Length: 92
Image 1 (cartoon, rainbow, N blue to C red):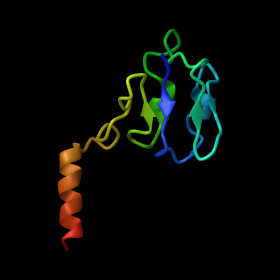
Image 2: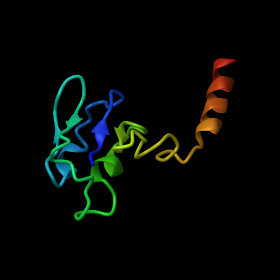
Image 3: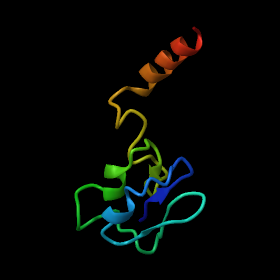
Image 4: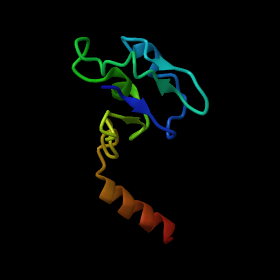
């Protein structure tokens, strides 16, 4: 089991210091998670700390490839409402 960081990561450094297993490392073009070290914070925290602090929705995936912090989880705005609002702005 391991989390992964995808290319939407903006290298903000927020996750680096909160990882209890030191699995996150600086790489290019974005931060990465060492699968051999990642425990998904089991035994240390109720939720993965990297995903809890990550400001980018969908940047961290679980072992199944699902976003740990999916679209709408940080803003509280359902994705379909965000799409509708963006379409209205673009049509102006």
